Length: 278
Image (cartoon, rainbow, N blue to C red; front, side):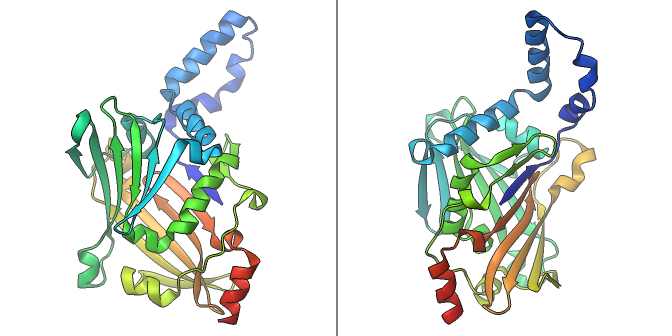
């Protein structure tokens, strides 16, 4: 399992120039350097690191709710800011609404691009972020259409595993060793079930013996700058095992986040064997 953030340009500049700081010897200057680095990144990476630590103690810090086919993560100790979302994704929210207590919700909507059927024209992949009055992320809602690509049980297990992941700072990746992944006694959706909801893909191909259905989307959102127009583009590649006719992997790109989840690595052998038998 792998999550990758696009590299922000300010961080890239800092990473390209490490040698210029090697002359700094004193403790005082090292503190100045740290302050400079945090200023460049707006502390966003420290807050992401705090989220990783919270996920390592998942049940202490996160409450999961499934309601009306939505999968919602409630963060008991909010850390990330609404500005962090804009900084990482380079996107503005598609729509907003106020909630009680001075908080607010941001929605990011993705429409099919292109929509190949009348039904696809009316459907959206949406993510809803609820923020407190002091702009901290308190919940994240995955819409039903996204759960067709990332089934709720497997999505929760994947998110839980991030606390045990290893960070590759150069590549801005968080990777989880298969040995650290939880195991689920759960079956995976069949291709007919997925396409009945999502509709026809934009492309079909074969990769490593797996059938790949490719869906593309466009964010109904403004970018912070025209240089980031490509951030509005999203893609989901769904891999199906033709022998079992079931979804086994997701590779996607949404709002500045690339993700890759191999569902087979989350399945217990008994569940996988049962799928073969059926």
